[in-house]
Image 1 (spheres, rainbow, N blue to C red):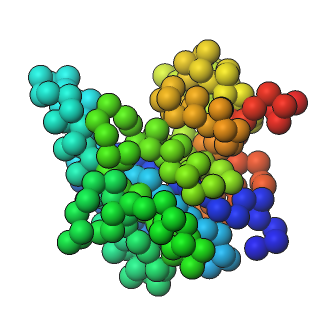
Image 2: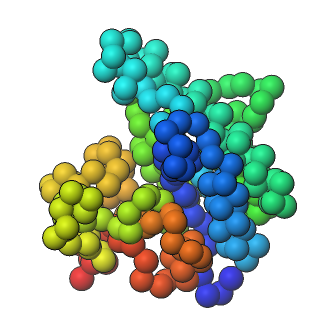
Length: 243
């Protein structure tokens, strides 16, 4: 544990990351891969919180764009995150890791209601805590929920697992000449409109000096590499740290 740069982390997973090569739903192989990667750092004593999105099942923004009332669509998206959280919990527990799902919307029959002090206690007991249902409010993304929960549990770092190996100055899929940043400031992310996380989440991290680490979820052993300080992905941080 002494070799780890961060002792308590909040991992942000998109719902899309869980569907693998399929166009919808949850791919069990992706869940098993995640469990094997996370177990490495969990067994070393790193305290892990996770916020998961629901875009593999339902996206509130997409529902609103098709004419659905926005708040109603967002609540449906929150319920999708609970389904993903339960799937993650099942996989983690079958892999031998104790895990709790805490929802911002009360549903006592399937998971715990989110209480900050209880979540912190779970982490101290080396239980993975999966935060579901976003912030519990419409119009707020799971990116914002991730930043909020990371600050509430006093995480050392917000880790965002994506399909690319960091932050680029433009889309690397459509621009072969795109340049990847090793480090970048919060203000540069906002002013360049780089879409790392939504503006509210980035601003929240900026105001509280919470580093954001963006990396490729498919890179082998990436969680341990990131937490031991190896050069992985892109780190978003303040002006002073970036110098």
